[in-house]
Image 1 (cartoon, rainbow, N blue to C red):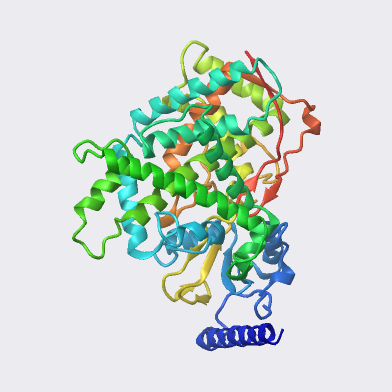
Image 2 (image 1 turned 45 degrees about the vertical axis):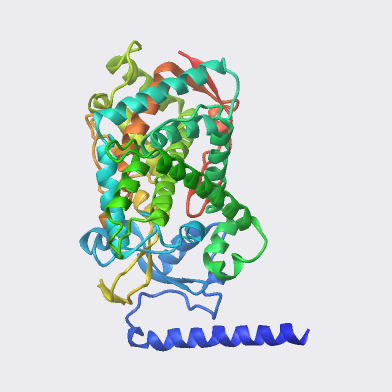
Length: 494
């Protein structure tokens, strides 16, 4: 009992010293930092924030403190940017200063600042440059990848036909299909839809992705230095992430045994060849840890965001059957029923394009974006942000900026159509973020969303067990990610 008491006193003393040292180091910034609620020691602004509604909590603070303010998530100091003007000013106009990567504690439990998505500095630059070039070499954004998506769409349509109009949950139908596209690039092959290991991987991805949106997931973001050692749902998320990493390691080991340096088959092969080329470079970023984490970054991001967007899209179209009918009419008129949709059809289908954009805007998959970090002391507007400070560019506040969208809380494709019914771009449409750390999978995601949605709607109409007015399109969770509610539906042949 005495020993545990002494340990507790020692721990509190250490934490107090750390807090005092932090305050002392930042004294030169007093009076220059963005405004915000006064934090308490150790818990920060926990009492002013709801872990159930983190995004809404931050939006309420915006009403009091303006579009640029500061909060403390436990001991994490975060500058929050709201609205299109503030986000663009930071991520585009001052792109270099805001190019660092902030914390995403759940994922960083496994990535540990390695890999293309969650690294910083020279490591991030080298891995990003290599990934973009290599993915392009394997057909990213070219004709080759379009054919892979079309082929996968054919498998998905066959799977929906096999349901014979029965009521189903579309979640894993969609994630299997989307995952197979990125798998063909990263691993050089697709999975059979009934492969048990494949289905297990998809459940691990969905589980860990959904955890980041839950109340516990948001609590973990605040107190991860302690919570990572405690029992709770976070331990299941770690188990799932570890399972995904183990799978990638197994894939890499297989590629190592069968590698032909003169004939790379996929992204992993290309990375292994680069590792061989840089063996004598002691400072190389091309090593096994970065290979495994980068492959996992691509595999995960290339699956969950697009499949969840499509799942939200189906729900919204059942809620708005008039929108579904107009998309069907445009598909029949432009594509017909006797050939597969092509990406080039998009230019002749302004209404469908507007609907896809509105699904992405309304669905708002990553509302707080991936956290950024300023890489040096940064003057922003009238404030001075200390080097290393994390930044939340609130993409949700941009996608719902009333200066750019007339009815931001409503699902309305007219947000992306002009008075003549032609598609119009909108400067506040940035679901893939902007600036130096934007999502470089944007081109692939756009192609997948168009080709999958049009191919499915060319062949089926959607039916919900509920009437449209009873369908609830509010999210199930909103945290790091936006998660739509679980639902069932039927795919009825047209």
